[in-house]
Structures are given as structure tokens and as C-alpha cells.
Length: 322
Image (cartoon, rainbow, N blue to C red; front, side, top):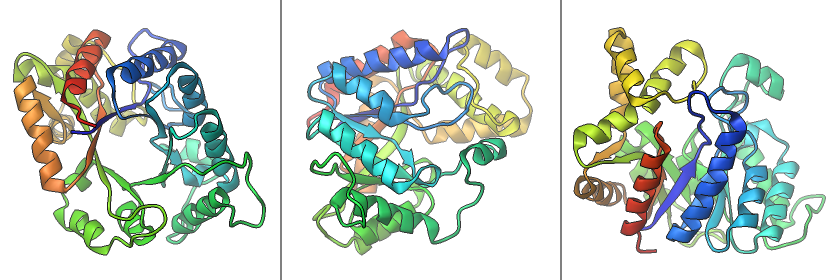
């Protein structure tokens, strides 16, 4: 199966943002050596616990240290940027790393109201996102009123399945990345394949599924490894931030004293993850691809222990076929 990695530059308790960024770069170098197809980085502004705010800048550093792996934005949030600037940064990455760049675009606003105000975008009207995506594509292809530089072949565009991204990707004939609850929405997934309009960007639908993965010698241990991220997700609903990952034991103690609402949020998050023994994870990923019609898995591997991340990466690399 085709497997790629998404790295959000998550910090650990007691670790600096700079250390998290350095670890992301080193992980990308290792992913290149292991033969993964893509390595994508994320955009999160002013969110404690997540160090990556500028995926294109981070990818420039990664590109200088890697040789083969594709480099992608997972994604650039279009509402936060001028379309011309998005195109210019993507083209510059392509000039630095010819044939290795993916431009993943999303439509999310800032995580909290203060962040949205700081970014200068507090609301998004229904038609804004499709129009701005099209403006990015016009600048990339040289069809706009000004010519974006540098003048190189544009990288492929991928849409994230947020803010109507699945339907928009089908309409524009673009590959799409789907994660979270949308993976269980069979109607929307089927509509992407049914309504896909082939075009210059892609001759046929291309669906990538995004999911969290944890592998261990027992299902119980694999589940435990996910608790720090699951807790951070549930806690974010109350505090408005993804706090730094805490050790598994501490996350378990926090859960033991949590109210039912937070426990349900943790369980809901775990329901969307893939975890277990190597055999169970391989079977689950195969089933996910078959059920959704996806061609590729974009994996999050996030737990407190970085050695466990490394071991999971090595296992996932053993499954890849392309």
C-alpha cells in the first residue's frame, strides 16, 4: 500500500518549539531513507503544543536535507493568505525541489477568535473559499492578470476535505485528502467518485485517507500510546489549545479523574484511529482503503515517546508498495 506521513510538529511536555521543529526535520530525513511516498507538514497558528505555523518554510528546510520523498503542505489554509503569496511560495518550493512538491490546500480559519483576528480573517462566506482556491490555481498556471514567480512548472494541488472540500475537489477534478468523521460518511465519499470531473490536474479521482496510527505488541499498549494525543484533543475543547503531549501514565491519570463528557471525547477520537498489533494495523489499513476506495494513506503518528514514533514509522515503511 502507498503510505505517507503527516507531521504536525507536536511538542512534548518540557520540550521547546525549536526542538519539535528540529525533530520534524530529522523525521523527514528518516522517512526519505525508509521510502515513504510523501512527507507533509501542517499549518497551525499560535496554538500551544503545535510548533509548525509555516509549512512552506519548514518544507524548504526539509527539502534541503532530503532527496526523493515528495514534500507537501497539509495544508496551507487559504483563508489566512493572499492567493498570490500562496502560489509564489509553492512555486519557489518547486524551484528548489523540482518534481517533489505537493500543494495541499485547506479552508479552515484560525483555531480561536483571537487568532482569527490576528490573521485578519474572522469569517468566511459560502463562496469565498472556492473562489480563492481558483485564484491560487490561476496564479500557479499563469492564467492570472499578473505572473507569479518563479516561472516553473506548477506543483499538483490537493484539497483537504474541510469546508466542502470533497465536493469542490470533485468539481475541479482534484485529488482530495479525507480524515476524521468524513471517513465514515459513505454518501459523501461515493459522491466524490461519482461527480469527479476529469481535467488537466487529474484524469481520475484520487482519494487519500488521513488517520492516526499506533502499533505495539498488544492492542492495549497501542491504545495507551494514543492517550496523550487523545487527551490533548479532548482538552482542547475546554481550553482552546492543543497542549504539549504528556507521558502515557500522566494522560491515563488525567482520564481517571475526568468527567464523562471529556471521556466521551477521548473515546470518539480513538474510534477514528487505527491501533493494535502489527497484524491488526495492517488489516485495518487494508480495510480502510478498500472501504473508502482510497489509493493512499496519510498517517499521523503522535505519542509522547519519540522512540515509539520511530518504531511505528519503521513498521509502516515495511507495508509500503509504492
